[in-house]
Image (cartoon, rainbow, N blue to C red; front, side):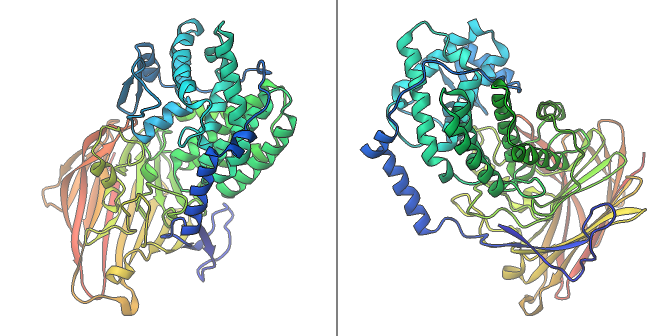
Length: 582
């Protein structure tokens, strides 16, 4: 977890609610699950196959559901139309429905989760009438029931998948329960009841964050929609309260620091709220308070185009889509400017929005696929993104080579400083993050002329003997983004000899770049016609190729500004400026 420590620079909280300084500590950052934890989880899943667990799943199944919830979200029309054409499609991976065999899953894990969760029901219902969609949904349901309804296996019976499955089954029941085949209908309802009993005993075993929230939302959906579910409802509300307390910080961020995961959790809670509404019941106040905090934090990592930034491997979500989701929550709040626990800082003046990753990275225990992006930033001018992260490590097209997807997690794939072409936090082959950034110093000031952040991290101390400090200031008129990157010797850990470094500023594909005649600057033009001048001192400027993963998960060619240099034994400072000329 990330703990907040006292800092000598802390001067209290200003009138605007911005805290002036913090020390952020990553505890247990490079430690994944212990051997005891892994053995416990292994034996827990082995126990699914025992006769005792099978007996626990036995019981009466409902003849019908009490009500049908309204799914407040639209699905993906492209995936929905592909289903109508007989093809299940997800992030570039495609499988024909007619040959799909759940007993021989020849698919990737993300595709398998999409199929097993039944999230495709939302996509299908978005593009088709009940009459058109029901035969398609029933065909896929029969395939799943034939393999998994009576046999408890991993991953099909993973608790987070069952949670999502129950939410989608109950919200889209007309698509899967329209058949006049009473035996088929009975199998669906029987599987639903067994899945709910399985969830009762396993929801607390999945990782914190969106997976555990999904599991407990499923418990509650079953309690609300299956007759006689009042005891399960009370049990589920207590479980979801625990899951939210452990997964959502006081500032609304989610475990793992992924905006995409936060968006997922917000949609889960909103769909659950509609499940309550179908029963004409109100959710507990704790759920509503958590949802409000989460929406505030989500808006804090959205750009001037209202779309989601690409942190922790996510892809940029369109501003209209974010607007639809936030509207569905019913929450009306302003973006959060400072999220210490979650780890993002937002500077916004006039049209300019700047978002900084200002915390240690996710800990290995709760996050696979995290990124070594500490002190990276993105910034936008109105509807135009200018400086970005490559993004997409956890949301890219599944046809991409694994090596490229892993490369998107590196420090070099983010707009920050890199020492000796190494990551500020190690990336392990199993997908977890290891040693690196363990402690950060952070200070923020708000004045009449500018918003300023000064932060430093120790990610390069152990290997290279230097601390990276970054200062960023956004002028009150939004026309100047001033920065300074410094490498500071870390006491006795300082290493002899010059230390090579690179500072990268990845640019959005829509930005046109022209170097200045003196080679020390560049002119950036946005699609809206704005012109930004870039200047730097203390390092050599170059322009290199880069990639940016778009909202569909497709890498797009773009460019990056690159400052290169060497730090002498006494350290170095490099200053840079983005100035809006018009």
